[in-house]
Image (cartoon, rainbow, N blue to C red):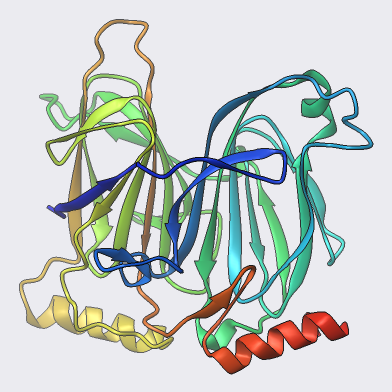
Length: 336
């Protein structure tokens, strides 16, 4: 079982633009000795937009709530909608609305500019708005890859039924997991990534126990979005980000060489007793029929193990690369 190291949840919320009220639960620039990028690699940043009520916007067409054009370089930007709708537009010509359950996965690569607003439909009617956004680092070999934008409808993503481990027949469903990216017992998510990453959107709706299996070489985190439950025997509630102990093999430093990392993992599984996965135990108990389901988001990723040099919307490997990125942006060569 992968032990819990710490439960985070004390970050104050703030506004990004005028449309996203978020708490930044992961930030690669933080240098706390017990929680920094070495513990979250390859996840650079994670903003949790807890449910927020917006009144109808009378100027939803001319002045939608959100954030205007801004650049990114060197990583993937991932947005998952939970309530409300988001309109995306970028310098590559991509434009799309995502609705609850949908995912946008944008690779900034060598450089892209985009904007994000509440959709016209949501701005007109108002209501509850909730989302998460994360930055997933790219290894040095792919920092300058071509930018691209992808949207995935919830219906495009495989859904796994979670069965109650306590049930006699082990066939009683207690929830489900949407596999956005990564692999679940041979089931592959809709999104392909540059390094091994799991993003699973999980819901528990019935009392019981479910066991998750995560690669033992991955840094692993779990966001509790709604409800309360026991995770590995520890009580956690909504708004908590669970940081699990570091991967079992601290000698793996991929330095962008994923093939060597996978070979190392294979050799370990062949020549040692180290299991290929660790377990995380979820226990949920409903108090009555009206109990709110528990909603979770699991993040796990194989550490890239490379240095990061970042400022604002740019994340590179060296300070010189970062300075060159700013020069390119200021001289009109950004993304070229």
